Image 1 (cartoon, rainbow, N blue to C red):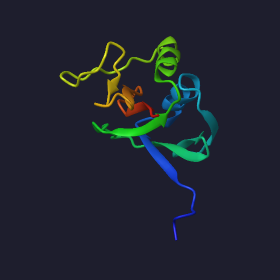
Image 2: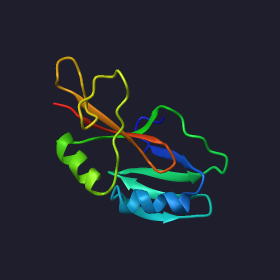
Image 3: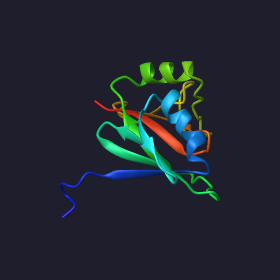
Image 4: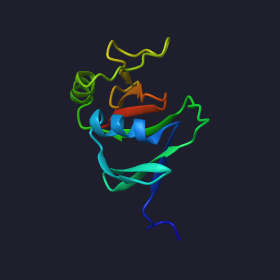
Length: 125
């Protein structure tokens, strides 16, 4: 039944109005509007609801990741917008925070939104 249904993803925040500005202005996501509960964005055809949960505490896992054609270009662009990338101790990332798979084909890096939600970029062959 859900095979052909469009997915909706939810990202939690204590204040969707404040967080929406970062997703729109820093990440450059297409803002679609909001209601009293959430701001809505388009993620390349998938709807994302940035939803207010007043007592929200972020988890340690990645909540959204983007596949990018060139991770270094994407990192440079986001760094220019003030995004800081995370380097996890002992994970073997380079100075930009990029972890490479053993075969070096897949590269991943992580960063947080202002509420601590973990986001990622992935470059795949």
